Amino acid sequence: MRTIEAELYERLSKVIDPELGRSITDVGMIAAIEAKPVAAVEADGRQASGVSDDANADDSGADGAAGSADSADVYDVTVKVELTVKDCPLSQTITNQINGAVSSYPGAKLIPHIEVSSMSRDKLADLVAGLKAERRQNPFNKPGITTRIFAIASGKGGVGKSSVAANLAATFAALGYDTAAIDADIYGFSLPKLFGVHTQPTNLNGMLMPVTAWGVKMISIGMFAGSERAILWRGPRLQRSLEQFLADVWWGSPDVLLLDLAPGTGDMAISVAQALPNAELVVVTTPQPSASDVAVRSGLVALQVPMKVRGVVENMSYFDHNGERLRIFGEGGGARVSQQLTKALGADVPLLAQLPLQPEIRETGEAGRPAVLTPEGALDSSPLARSFEALAKRLIA
Image 1 (cartoon, helix red, strand yellow):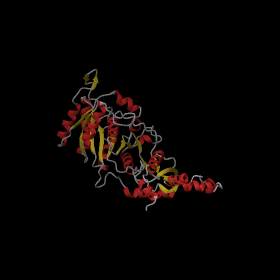
Image 2: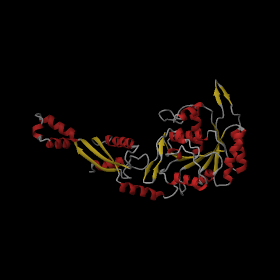
Image 3: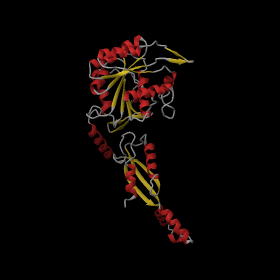
Image 4: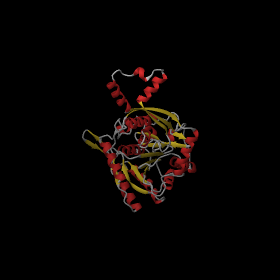
């Protein structure tokens, strides 16, 4: 018969480390499992205290036999867990999952005792070396990759591009997709604030673990110390920042990766096209001609680099007030961008969505929660959330 320890090890193989996206057994986090019958534990305790079993025996033989039978099915289980780093921010999450896996064991009543420590330097070095050996380069530019990559772009600032990127990422995550996001707007990073992130990525011997917030794994230059200072990177250094975000961060295998690009058609847009030729460009504009004319230029980058333009999103299209739909910024900008890009590129560039202007996007976003989500993290039932849900489903189709 298989031992309880062996069966528990198999159950724990289904517990996934939230950062690495791997089973805690595969990455060597389970150092030992020991199951001991409660009766034996009690006997050890009595012997240690100098009290014999005979002195504690129940005078009633029948009751004593029943008690022994009951205790034989109860085990104290000690699980020794070695986390990748000391004070791992997700320690409690992992511990709770282990407790659940042990407590729900069907064959007997198990009382879990979790002993948490951190890996030795050598063990961690071996783990990181193994993970890097699997990747060694940009993981999103390999044959057979299934991750859908959407680069969110705009011709000019102020059109709500980052808000669209943040709420779209949160929507994908709420719909059950494994979602990652890169804040590729090095000069005007916004995602940490929009997701309420105030922590830095965990550094595992030179490999970074992305920060997870509202179900989205993300990285941004804004997460690092000194990021409030002006950044004046150009050319090769700017391209290297994207390469590091792609290759030096452990992303696992997300279903969706979104990139929040800087406005315009500068170095970063070209770097994305070179590093991620399978990325699909989503152009964000607002209804007025001054914005839509500039937005066309960001889509025309596809004429210079091999990048598919997936479609256009018109943001701040209208504002509903007392039953009346107000077109505060005019109308038709998204359709104009769609038509011009379709003609220029010789391929269909549809108008994917017309998103409303709502104060909630700013208010909840500045408070650190994407507006499409409830405080509990579920997809809201608001018209805004429904619009983003429709956009996400259209993109992923």
